[in-house]
Image (cartoon, rainbow over all chains, first blue to last red; front, side, top):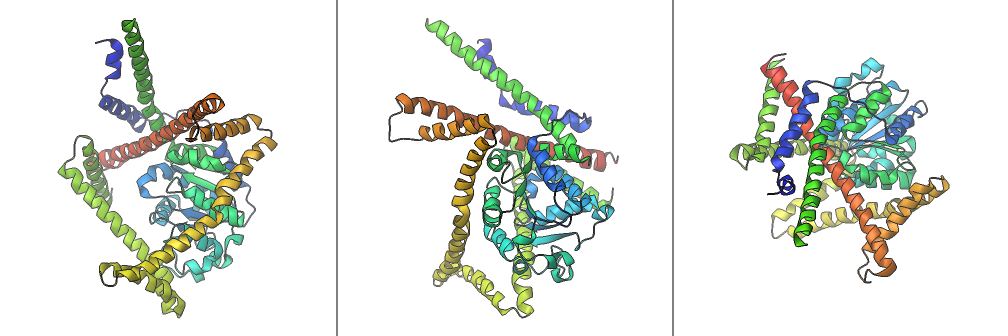
Length: 278
Length: 207
C-alpha cells in the first residue's frame, strides 16, 4: 500500500482522540494565547459605550443552555459592560432558557457591586411564547405583554417598567440568539419597522448568516466563545472565555493537520494512478 | 463544596459521560440519559410557559378584571379538541389564527428587511469607498445566481459565470462548515472544563 493510500485511510477516531488531548492541555494548564480583536467586537463595544446616559437597551434572550458555553463569556462580559455604564436594560425571554440563563449569569456578577438596583436599572422578564409574534408584541405595546417579572413579582412596582411603552422608548436592541435565523426576525421587527439598531450575541456557526447585516443594521456582534473572549480583553473584565478559546484553538490543530494529510493523500493517490495509467 | 454542589457535579459528570458513551455505541446508559434529558427539558419548558405566558399574560390579568384576556385562553384550550375525533375541527380555528397572524407579522417586513435592506447595504459599500468588498459581493451574488439557472445550458458566458458562482458557493459552504465545527468544539471544551473543574477537582479531589 502506498503512503498516500495510508494517509487517506487513517481512522477518523484518531482525529477525535488527538483533538480531545489537545483541548485538554489549556484546560489543565491555562496558556493565554494571543488574540486579535475583530471589527464586529469593537463595533459592539463602541456602540454600548456611545449610548447616551439613561438609554434603555432591550435584550431579546432566546439562546438556550444547549449552547451555554458559546454564550457564557459573551453574556457575562456584556452584562458587566452594561452595568458599568449609565444605561438601563431589560431582558426578555423568547426561548424558555433565556431568562434562566440571564439570571444565572447575573448571580455570578452581583450587579449591586456596580451600584445598580433591580427594577430601577435593570429587569429580568419572563419567557413569552410566540417567537416572532412575541417580539412584535413587545415592540408595539410592551405593557400588554407581561404583568410579572421572571421572579413572579408584579411589574407595576418597578420604575423601569413604567418608563417603557414600546419600541420608541428603547435606544438599542441586544439579541442573544438561539438560532441562525433569529437575526432575521430581529431585523424585521426592530430595524425595519422601528429603525432600531441591533447588536447580536450568537453561536459561532451563525456568524456567516448574521454578517449580512454588519455594520449598517448591526453595528457589532459577538459570535461564540471567541467573541466573548475578545470583549473580555477589550473591556478589561476577565471571564471564562480565555481558557475556552485557548482550548478551542488548540483543539483545531489536529483538524488542520488531518486536512493537510487528507489532501496530500488524495492528490498523491491521483498522481500515482495517472502515472500507472501512462 | 456543599452537598448540593457535590450532587450537581456528580449528576453532571455521570450524565455527560453517559451521553458521550454513544461515541462507543448505542447503549442503555445513553438511552437512560437521553430520556432524562428530554423529560427534564419538557418539564422546564412547561413550567416556564405556564408562569410566563399562561399565568403572567392570561390568568393574573384576568383575575384582576381584564376580561378580554380570556380570549387567548379560550383559543389555547380549543387546540386540545384535537384529542377528540368528533370535535377536532374546532382546533383548526386557533391553528389558522396562529398561522395567519404569524405569517402576517413576518411577511410584512420580510421584503424590506431581507431584500431591500441588503441591496441598500451592497450599494452603500460602493458609496463608502469600500470598492473591493462591494465588487466581490456584487460578482458573488450574480455569478452564484447564474449557477442555479437550470433553463439554459451552462456554456459560453453563462458557463464561465456559473463556474465562478460555484467557487463562491464552495467558499460559503466551507465557511459555514468551519463555523459549525467551532461551535461543536466549544461544546466539547465546555464539557471538558466542567468535568475537570467541578467533578475531578471539586467533587473527587476536593480542591
